[in-house]
Length: 266
Image (cartoon, rainbow, N blue to C red; front, top):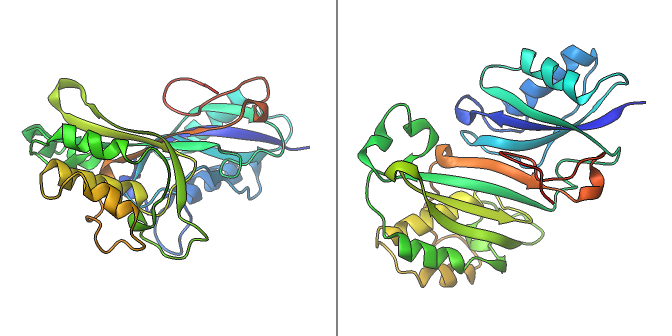
């Protein structure tokens, strides 16, 4: 009987059309499933907690899949890392209960968006991995805007698609934090669900507030709108990172946690 596993996946999104398989272009899902097919000798579907777009990175993408008998978390991690391309890496593999699903079982997801405000953010070693704004920001105004997002709201004004059953999301984290060595700021956000381009549209709007192009009160106004016509353009994809997915303790076999960067938390 097959066993269900959860892989914590890092990837550089620069060369991908996103997580999800596409008719054309290189996707993270197709690369991951290609490796699973090679080591299991049959096609295996991999499910992710979040369907990141083209150019978006991950440092804790949660990926679930079924493995034939005999595989362990240690042997799977070694096999995956031996065969995955250089822009992908599995940080950990955890055995899960049989009904676990990376997307459907998630309680919340966490993202981070990096903005570079110093001149060095334009460096070719940094610009593929952040928004190289190269300008100072009124961070206090951005923090005030971010606080208005906490709790449950209708984020229709921050969605790039209009085909959802509903647009309500519950945010448990929404804050701007200074990056080390004066490199700028990062936006940290966690919610039970996200809409298409939601994080990038929120960041784009808050950066406009930080540049004093629009007032802080606009954030509350946009949360009341039924379309995105007044929302600022989305921030560039390369500054966005899928950081982690949170799951209930009972879906783990002997472990409980928060997939991603550092530790497993409930």
